[in-house]
Image (cartoon, rainbow, N blue to C red; front, side, top):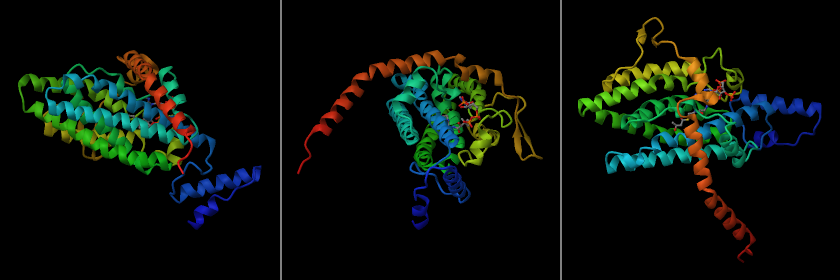
Amino acid sequence: MYTQALDQLPIEHSAQGDALRQQRFDQRMAAGRTVEPQDWMPEAYRKTLLRQISQHAHSEVVGMLPEGNWISRAPSLERKAILLAKVQDEGGHGLYLYAAAETLGSSREEMVDALLAGRAKYSSIFNYPTPTWADVGVIGWLVDGAAIMNQIPLCRCSYGPYARAMIRVCREESFHQRQGFDLLLAMMRGTEAQRRMVQGAVDRWWWPVLMMFGPSDTESAHSANSMAWGIKRISNDELRQRFVDAAVAQAEVLGVGLPDPELRWNAERGHYDFGAIDWDEFKRVISGDGPCNRERLAARRAAHEAGAWVREAAAEHSRKRASRPHAA
Ligand code: 3HC
């Protein structure tokens, strides 16, 4: 408590003051202590966090669409209830993350406007179609599995509100991943046609899932700073490798193949080697030209317009409450 209080002593605005603030920030980083909204932080650190957290929030919200599409067509009441709960969780993750991003000085309205105007990025993975029920299972197993691999280290992110939000998100994601695996296992124990459906979905999602981890470390524009600031703890390539290593064993349990002829165990490296990722496809998708980019944004815009009355009613309710005289 004593050192925290010292940290928060006001420093006068001057070149010397700036150097002192930077020094305290660096000491905080070196000591592995979290940065909180009231703490001074370098502008570039704030902007990087706002960029990443808002993109992450948008991903959760847009990520509701490919699966939400299947709620009314789930094959049983039980599967429907599970999927409904899962999609609601993703919406909740978006809200925690918008709230965390708001502590960095941008409003949720500004962030949502940027998404709807097509100025903000969200995860490439949600621009792929979900033509079969097996796609729902593969999203849970592989997409949520990749999300967990990437997000567990974010629970130790240097920015407190993001790290705390990620702890809850990861707990829920782990249920999502298991429900996907369980759904696929049920299908793999079913008919030949169901097994073919699962294999088809795995073949479609495998490479886009590997792209979720972002460009290779040598091409990643933000990694060096984000690692130095303790935002990212593990690099894009290392997380991708860890994911491949884990997924191979899980695919064996399911009894599905992974669509990569170059996938093989490398005893020297102690990891699986895998084939080349099509980075041109990745660039097309993140620049708005993937299979479903237009459809996803159109669906978000329609949902935003349809929800305008809810926002207006909530604002009016809160205005009325604020204008009421306080109870004695
Ligand atoms: N999709 C879209 N854009 C991507 C991307 C992806 N899979 N991977 C990288 N990019 C973008 C970056 O946003 C950056 O663009 P910008 O400069 O315009 O902001 C550019 O490509 C360069 O990439 P970098 O590696 O330099 O970027 P980062 O350091 O930000 O690393 C990241 C990218 C690993 C995705 C990192 O931002 C991250 O860990 N984000 C938090 C996790 C997240 O957002 N996950 C999204 C999936 S959420 C999800 O899956 C929901 C769940 O319910 C399933």
